[in-house]
Amino acid sequence: MAWFSDSGYWLGRLVFQRMLAALYLVAFLAAVRQFRALIGSRGLLPVPDFVARVPFRAAPSVFHWHYSDRFFALWSWCGVALSAAVVAGAADAVPLWAAMLMWAALWGLYLSIVNVGQTWYGFGWESLLLEAGSLAVFLGNDDTAPPVLIMWLLRWVLFRVEFGAGLIKMRGDSCWRDLTCLYYHHETQPMPGPLSWFFHHLPRPLHRVETAANHVAQLAVPVLLFTPQPIAGWAAAAMVVTQLWLVLSGNFAWLNWVTIALAMSAAAPLWGRPSAPLAAPPVWFEVLVLLATAGVLVLSYRPARNLLTRQQMMNTSYESLHLVNSYGAFGTITRVRREIVVEGTADAVTGPQTTWRAYEFHGKPGDVRRLPRQFAPYHLRLDWLMWFAALSPAYARAWFVPFVARLLENDRDTLRLLRTNPFPDLPPARIRARVFRYRFTTWRELRETGAWWHRTEEREFLAPVGRSALHGRR
Image (tube, rainbow, N blue to C red; front, side):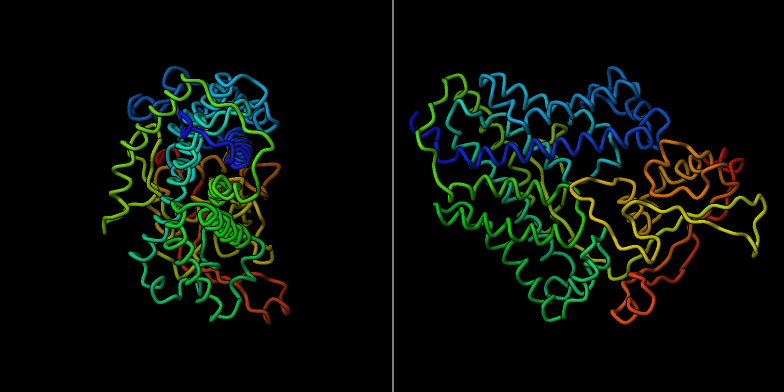
């Protein structure tokens, strides 16, 4: 079938696959470093407890058949090794069938982790990585010209990511419609980056321009993805620029980077074609691609319908394999930033004279004099969930008390999730948590105090509690 493949997409495929493999690598490394404290046998939400109550068909995962912390670590390290090999070009150095198996293995390895990750893996970019990864299986490698159908399906994913995000904003918070959301967003987003303070202090008229430009980038530009080249390529390039703007202004794990990879697959044809046409793919590969395309089209019905409904849902998977999903972000913007500050003391009995020392997180704001750091595309799962917990205790009901219990034990794996442990020698006697209202300081306050944040206490989140009291609350 002459129409089936097009050598002109070779660079788009190359860039997309290498970027996607690099993001798989980051995701597996995050799993290796964080799983013991979050979902390990003694984690805050243990995998063994989850698989005991959730059937395999609802969350397909190898860990339904066997789980141990050692096995999970080995599984994750296999993902690290395989994704690193693909980044280095291993999938282009083997026959087509072997390359497909490598990509399928990456998808399967990560699916098994996501499906037992529970709250810690309940983010839209997990499904986005899996959906993009499932299509990468059918992109082929250097032995064949890229299949046109799959390249178009990558645009379909990109369209849903951007257009879905645009629609949910227009249907959501009124500040998107009156162009004032960015008066607050840079300050109140889940995890600010090192430039967020400066973005926040841009002139308000420029914030309105930013918001209007966002609507154009997410509601108008995505439609151009389905026009002929070079228009589609330039539309994708514009999306890359807007996503890089988001990378600079905050920390959103690998959401922006997967979106950039998808956009690069459509933009790369602008940069030229290979010197010689690539070989046409074998018939068996064409058949598999046709079947995969038909499957995606069938599964696209519910995500497409979701785009058209006023009750649009964001970041939703309609089947347990995360093959075709709905996306969206920030339909509602918080106007006030609240943070939970967790503190411990060595005093067995607390009172007005008690000395409390704070635990500092890697990415979550705490110390007012500490400039936020850049962590994306790495994902700090506990830090993100702490932001949600500050919005409502319901987000932390299942895991916060176990988290405090681990701090009272000086649990090594849990402390690895934190930047500082104020009790390195002996565990604290008691832990408390308070909610503070945070705001960025002004230019004048920064010069006078050296503080990037100003905070005021609002309420108690957890009253002082010791080890003995927690045994009855787990």
